[in-house]
Image 1: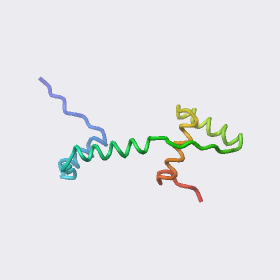
Image 2 (image 1 turned 30 degrees about the vertical axis):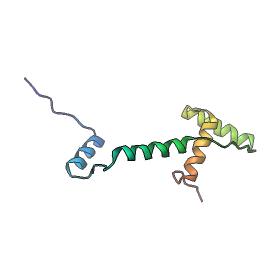
Image 3 (image 1 turned 45 degrees about the vertical axis):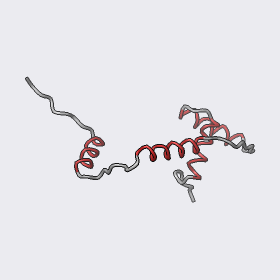
Length: 94
């Protein structure tokens, strides 16, 4: 009977090496940490303000095309882009 060795991709190998190397630590109060992260996610996703802005029709068309390529509604795309900008995950070109 032949045993096939497990095949790992690059990411899986890195995780395995980190685990075996002691890079991971247990979370002391897992339930409290999960609740904190759930609350943060909920607050991040809550949309409780409405704004109206005027932009050029050309810019709007470009935003709509980018949103279509991403497969999301253009208003969601704009909101997500603004969130990434203010959270530091999207950098301005200077």
